[in-house]
Length: 380
Image (cartoon, rainbow, N blue to C red; front, side, top):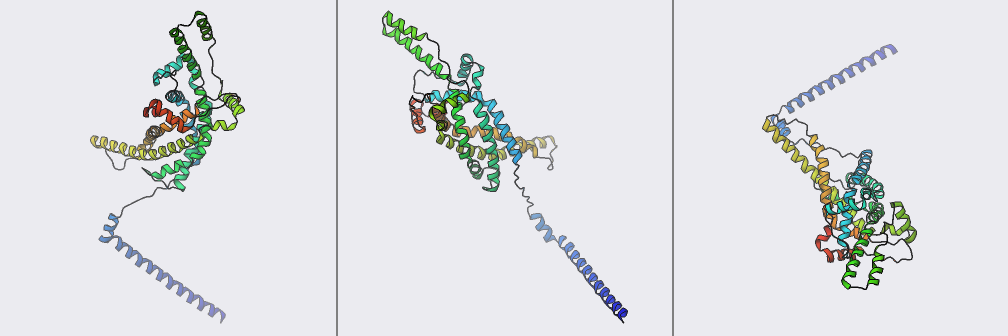
């Protein structure tokens, strides 16, 4: 009886499973037929053809690439551009100086004068601080921009103001690093200028002696004072400059001009990344259109051709144009910054410091040179 019961249960189970399998197979076949009929429907084909085929490319954040790229850009850019930065700083302080003894020179004239009178080594005097700080700042700026653009502002390719906001967000941190660097760099770049200004004052004194018809004794005394050894630069290195000024005036002296420098940093990085993303798309389009035009003229145009080369080539071109654009837009602030940080700071605590603020420097610059003084040294 038990065996018969088990066989009955097994038979019933097999029958039920067979019916279920047959039902599933029949249902799958019915669905397959309906799917094929739907795909062959003219209405479906029309809707499929009209539907746009869009693919969303997710933004990726590669920390290692951003760090390496920013560090390399800081080192190479500093070494290549520092002689031009020296000429720029000298021209900026020429424009902001109210002394008539400062001779105004153009970029090439000033560059040849520095090489002739101060030597080749002076072109890199004070390169240490920017070599270190710009490597750090470029690493931070590239990394923070990529992160904030993707996760906070969701910036898009092209002319999107969110890209500017993503770049500007790190400016307060950048300012903490670049203010001491710019201060020491400017002090070192202008250190040898004191010799030139002393020469100009001596020349003016000689001319005044001849015009005033002084007595022979007084004239000899004045001439003896003119024949004294020429003064040399006060600092031999950036470290010695920092140590001398900090020991006399405290660590806060390194943050002279911090406000105007931080504002300049925010404006520069915001303009840079906004222009960079916009220029990159524009140049990529121009390169692709040019390539298609040449290919169609030669009869070798193909719609399936690889276009990644255009984006790769547009990156350095956009970087160059965005750098020039952002520098031009923010250069007046840099000119004021150089005037504030380029003031003569005494190395003894007994000598009082007569600091000139950014607003006063700006007013004096307009008074001496007008609006063109805000762009003194923009060419280098």
